[in-house]
Image 1 (tube, rainbow, N blue to C red):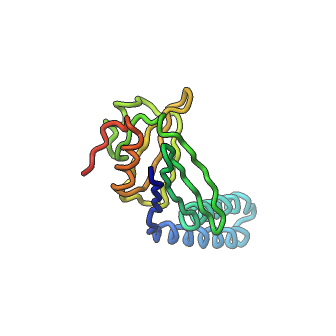
Image 2 (image 1 turned 180 degrees about the vertical axis):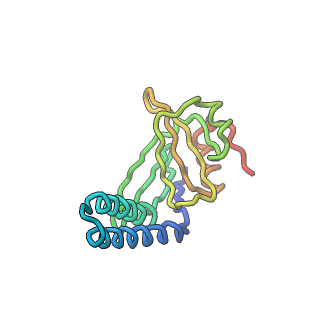
Image 3 (image 1 turned 90 degrees about the vertical axis):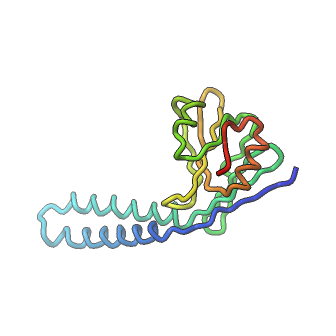
Length: 169
């Protein structure tokens, strides 16, 4: 079988804007907390939390890329932050139970009533087209969120064998 790779395209203008606004608000709140209050601890803690959310948005959505690969009957997810690449998922497709669109909650519930673990490997803050790959990991019912194109997901379903009622639109 041929190895297939797919890298989702990024369009995270909202995440970058949100991060910059959060960092600016945190800085302003921290600077003003000492001027107008006798005990500035609470506004400073709020500024710290808002700044941490801004940093998270920058790292998670602006600096992080994912690449999905199909090698034989394995799904690999490689995470790239800056120049560092790390394989964060190497999953055999023999454990697959279904492939659905994220909006298709009825289809997902037909396979699993509840999901124990969710792994989010999407690159965009606001998703356009997200697929859910349901699988079993020992006693856990898990799902992976992927932002892939139709061709990659069709090949994933073919290699999975029992990919469930995934239907192309």
